[in-house]
Image (cartoon, rainbow, N blue to C red; front, top):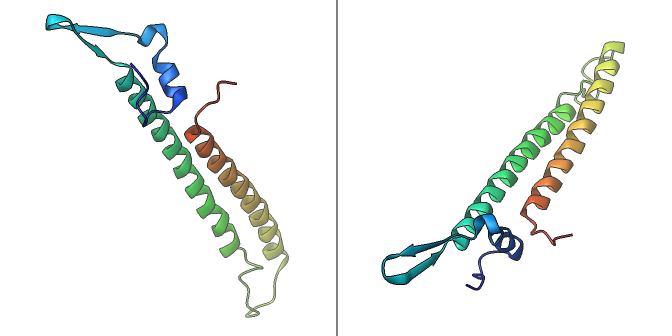
Length: 121
């Protein structure tokens, strides 16, 4: 059977491994090749995993922006003098924002890598 157009080559190759090469004999010599079904199941699982990474990225982006919005120095509009505690909290928020920003970018890169067909390298 040739690879259907909607199935990336790397998934077709995975479905062609000996453990997956099952041909079901149905009455009167009809053969059903289950490789397309296996490949589509792998595609669905790949997308599910990428969606988890997307959700993780979204949460980290929200936490990153919260670190800016909740920073007592950045949010002060001159209504009151800044205290030492404000500056310390601002430093903590900057660190938190940097961490969540890097986690956001890592998660988006992971999601993209999951969705990218393997080159076999």
